[in-house]
Length: 284
Image (cartoon, rainbow, N blue to C red):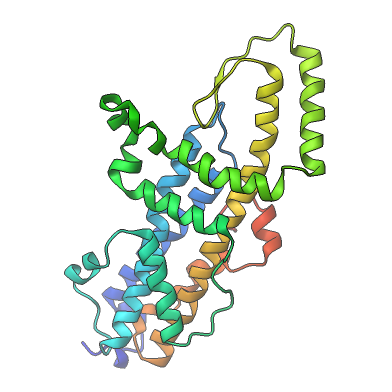
């Protein structure tokens, strides 16, 4: 079928498949960044894993939508076979680089540039590591047999490589740090002699006193907010590439399977203020 001659895209099976995939990716990413904004060492440790699963898969599949659109444009509207999609691989760092290469090669007018912050770079690397079964998704099971794999535990890795960068840039030496310590000292003065505390933080250290736990809770609020923000910067950039490329595919090259596909990700192409303050994603 010559898709360029089809006037009603809703009758194209490929259009329906692209729509289903876009809907899936939109909500995978949304659940991931929402979970990042609430994950902590205490009662919401599992939210870290929700975030890692949603984001590692969601970002991978968002880039693959970009690669599919690029393939269709290059092949006269023909969609890639399953073997071609499989050849794209699963390495998130390489996939993100491939998306940037497409944007440059096709000279797309992308509304946002690739985030250059070391934090955003480390976030992509951490998610890439999580997607690796041995280093990420199954690290807990593998550690049962080989405890030395503990350093690859995803939450430990996230705190050591991402959270610490956030704290260095946004927390240490600031008035915010002074406020957290002051509040922790007040809580410790009220409860320190009567409360029993036993928590394990993200890096595996045991916390047995109110002061230490309270300070960690204060730090977590910064990591939650800015972990979400710096992740959304990557999402926004990739969504902008897909926006430009899917429009080019449909309206510039007659690949009607991508008609309106950009609408699924408009929720992520918003100003920094929304990325920093909105806690539930995708936006409605």
